[in-house]
Amino acid sequence: MSVALKVDGLRMEFGGLVAVKDVSFEVAKGEMVGLIGPNGCGKSTTFNCISGLLEQTRGRVEVFGKDASTMRPEQIQRLGVTRTFQHTRLWREMTVIENLLVPPRNQFRPLDVLWKGRKHAAEQARLARAYDVLDELEVPHMAHNLASELSGGQSKLVDIGRSMMGEPGLLLLDEPVAGVAGPLAMKIFANLRRLVDETGISILVIEHNMDFILRQGVDRIVVMNEGEVLMQGTPDEVRSNRAVVEAYLGSAGDAGGEEE
Ligand SMILES: Nc1ncnc2c1ncn2[C@@H]1O[C@H](COP(=O)(O)OP(=O)(O)O)[C@@H](O)[C@H]1O
Ligand SMILES: [Mg+2]
Image (cartoon, rainbow, N blue to C red):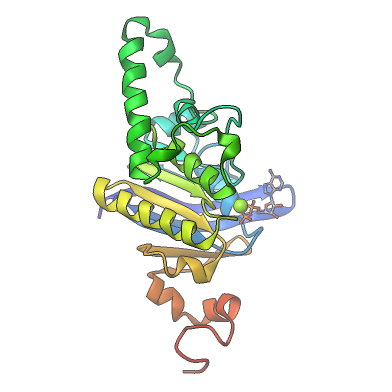
């Protein structure tokens, strides 16, 4: 198994608050993994440490075999990692395709702009890529809509599209379907699954709804609770784990019975 991301003993303290408590897990190449847990359990903080926005108190982050523990965000991005943020911010007065052409936060590549001779060709390639991304997400018809006209769910979709622009090897998505209506949320996950299967990239996706993630075809789920990894395994393993059932699914959960 070839590893895309390895998080080992990750710990993040904010003063006296331990937001992430010695968390360890891996994402293989070509794998789609869910990172799940209730609000405030440390999911986004884990992403912030992986992507270099926060310097962890302790622990190691390895990306495609390279030690990324002390790298800056743009160095980690150069290893092929792109992330989205929990709160989507598009340029409202620009069209969808224009939004795709704007590099995400912290992810500008000054060389593209300075390299004058190649600039035109690079712009053409980027535009073609933007249309391809909308095709991959099955929303080519949205290309020329203003971002301000989009629903919350459509905005999330464009944000995912933006993260796909640089053809990353590892996508970190922070609650890509929060507040998105059921059918579109399922479609977004189906598209992510297809992306993983067809291109072999890896996706680590944060979600807070356990019932939902169990049915979205992810390969594995890492369950967090109060900063710690409660358990990790396949959706079937998670569904039948007593601690998870008690914490999340309740006694009436679909775990195949309350006792034994
Ligand atoms: N920059 C920060 N400074 C202080 N506390 C923070 C910071 N970021 C997150 N926290 C705290 O860390 C805990 C985990 O937050 P977070 O990782 O955002 O949770 P989740 O994404 O699982 O909802 C929360 O108690 C939150 O208030
Ligand atoms: Mg969060």
